[in-house]
Image (cartoon, rainbow, N blue to C red; front, side):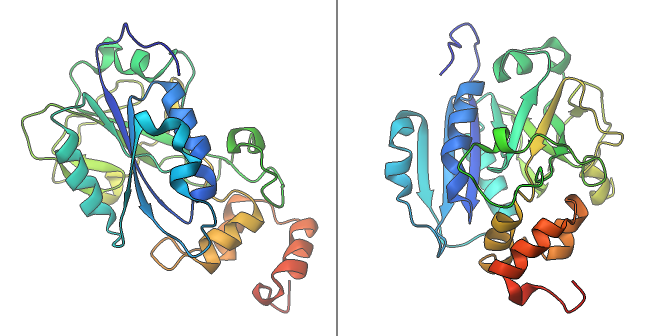
Length: 273
């Protein structure tokens, strides 16, 4: 973990995992090395979890908390924990375990958040940069940041995720995973977004055109076809359940992938495929 003794701030990342256990080690390692002080993992057990999360992450036990929950209400989680941690931490983040904050100029997250361009802001909305499957078929046990290097410009890059300032004397209210009220908000480059409580909610999800010059989130939204089917189609039962149509909006439809599905998941294909 990098030496951040010269930065006078504390940062917490709160991540909830459901059907994502195979990625959590890489995620925790990445964000601690990026400069995050503490990671609170909200863990919803899945039927395909075949690894003990406590043993898996034992190496990081001084910098993490694992909390198991049965109920999954995203907005309640974001609102509750932002208010719970706002007194102790200077900045609070809620990135999912397939979202990797990336910088082009700053050395680490504390260097980025110490930039004077954010002095007057309470929320920074960082754009996604959607990464496709690199035409891979399954998880070959390399890290996601090594496997997926190709960006997709046709889907989702205008969407954002927030970093919110702690130690403010106000109630923190989460409306969507992309935005908190009432916060003075800027984009990743420190430009005022003039958000207000009367904004169309759908508009607060986005910064358009996307700002990727200084910071962005690498979003590995589908991963490979095998991972997508396993985690987003078969065992996912909530609002994040996806179809193959969604996968093809992000990734190239190749004969290799169709043949893979025919061999491993033939029940998913229509007569015409």
